[in-house]
Amino acid sequence: MIETSEVITIISEGVWTVITASAPILIVGIVVGLIVSVFQATTSINEQTLAFVPKIIAILLSLIVFGSFIINQITDYIRTLYESINVVIR
Image 1 (cartoon, rainbow, N blue to C red):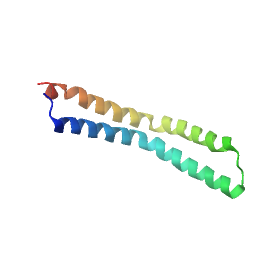
Image 2: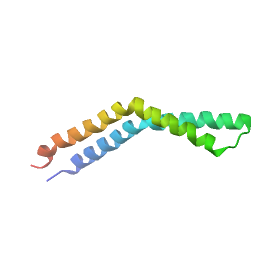
Image 3: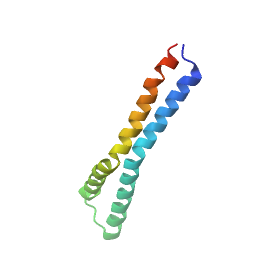
Image 4: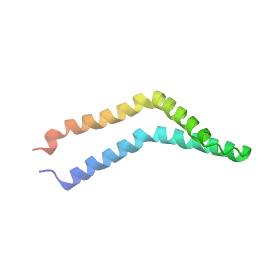
């Protein structure tokens, strides 16, 4: 039977994997959104597509740049889970 501490460890590793895998994309989106909003505030341009298009482009580019890092993080976690099946199921 699986112990409570093992379940908590698996869940915390999963949460940490999600945070580290999504952080680069979220940071890029926040930075680009901040730059666009400062630009909109200084020029008084209130076009809504101006806020979304640069963010979409930046996020797609960040997926291209950080895609291998994200895939490595997720596959390492899945590999760890797969290898721990023998330990968890006794």
